[in-house]
Image (cartoon, rainbow, N blue to C red; front, top):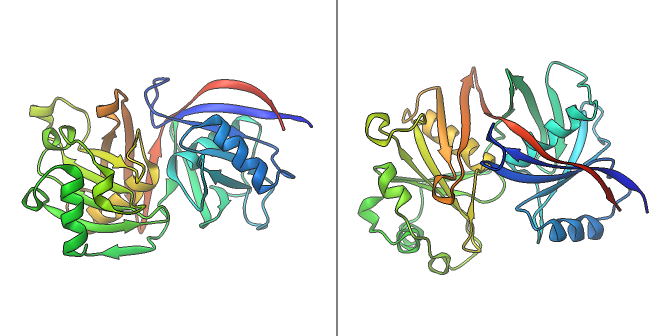
Length: 279
């Protein structure tokens, strides 16, 4: 048994306890899959990450990302939170950007002023949503299919499918029933904000629903794939801010910026708990 650094951080909010929490365990080389899964189950957060030495010579560190039940190849808020902890523990990137190795490959991360931002990974699936799935999505959201303005597969690892509604008020009024989706299907919902009417600093409001029936406070992977869809289709400008977590009493803000062919997904990270864990 040994003591290794442990941090719990809040991602996508400059205000503690208003973003999405993440547990990060550093110096995790030597932990087997069963131990990492057990720790993630114990923390009971949406994700727990484990920092290890990279196997790719071009990467700065390797991260393993676990939910309480399974490992993920990539997730957004764990990417920013893990990088924040790695830098805070004295990590120094080998090149201009931090390069994270994970199950989805290599992910670039940069400092964007006080924030960190990751390069949106390529989508594994895009394109139209089949009518039968769209009907089940509408049923799960308690709306008619006519209320869905657009729909798109936006899967960059976790399996996201997304729909757009007409207004922020419609989105915030949703009551999600996961049983209608008949499977392990995470669902993203986005709507444009009218800043004069809605009184928000954001351009879009987002909600992310999980197959278990829960709702994610702020979701980096979803916002990354939404940005690729919305900017690519000309629905969103090349720079915008997405709000998420409002329905849960959070105040997440995701800062999106397209630079050349790269879409960067940025946010603030705040350390809330600092100590060690015995493993």
